[in-house]
Image (cartoon, rainbow, N blue to C red):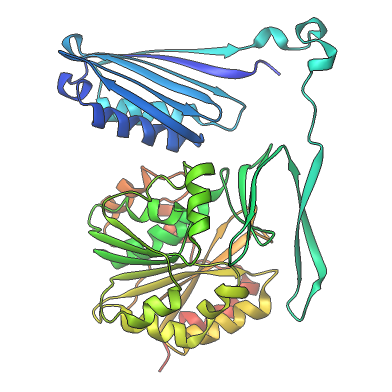
Length: 424
């Protein structure tokens, strides 16, 4: 151990004075930089001074980011202090430099608490940090015999933040030393601070980029807010309807996963707390893209895998170029459910194209998605500058990932490959 945390001091000279005096610009720039670093946002406070200047602080679970601007000198002072090794501070700094375009940057990096390394005198023996005292096991079983577990994944529990039951499911948020805060629904991992960006970026950007001009988008599920956050990165999007059956999931995510739930109050987003299948059944020819961020096919989420739901989704899409995408389960753990899902999708759309991503906390690690549409569905991006602009804001998705994610391992291509061919 070289220290308890890393402290970056950043001096930015020759910046645009107008930007340095714009509180909301600096606030959004700072929040986005912290999100890109992977830190957990707990709150923020910014103050506009007269006649000029802005001070601000963002509290993160790992410590803080603070700033003060002197517009009259074109100068900004920032510091970013984080604990642990999983935060990518350099990603935040790169965003700050790109946003402010300073003529000169002076940066220094400091290891804080370095005198603790290997020194018994540093901390009294009774106060030394202790390891995790309990474990949480995520079980996967046979759908025919759900009480007979076949697999178990264990996570050390550093702290349990909330455990509650809504009318629909049990909701748990806990902290793990590797994955940070983790959200479980009915005992299964839904998202984690450490790897959530993979799932949300791939479910959002692949279909959105393939569509090319998405203006109205529907998200079914997605109560943690991560998919909504990624969809709203597309500037052409005018409106996103997000339909979540369980308002308690949104409430818990706002409180305990603010870095994931940060877009839930964006003006382009409308939240609807109702059954997603019933909402879709009422819609006709409204959406350019529909994204389904569902739980596994159990309980209230089971209807979202049936062909009549897919039929309703197709009717809710605009007839010209509408696209549907959904998470499509684990190739290892959900083999029968996955094959049934793709059979139902092929009953509705002429082209059903599987693609994959690596998500470590989802069972098996290799996670599948389905991209569906009719008439000359070309999954390769046509507007590469748009892809690069979106990728600049991402931690997983980029042009090469987009091109390669449709390349399936042989075993999966043999099971799902017929979806790559147009149905006649």
